[in-house]
Length: 73
Image (cartoon, rainbow, N blue to C red; front, side, top):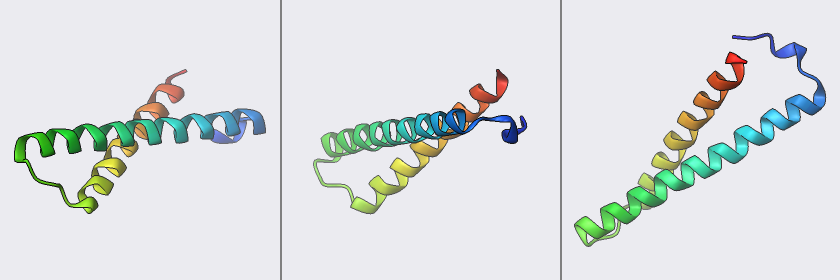
């Protein structure tokens, strides 16, 4: 891992915003696509809690990938 203390305030804020945007986009996309697929196949509604778990997992994966890419620079 790189030394996080070398970031300026602007860089840290930009990185945080990038992480948040990617987390929400990836989590929302993962939850939405899985919900549409499940409802079209099963012809039933999926429990809402499952959407939250899929959203969190998709967002976390995107967050970790972003960290890995940014640390490679």
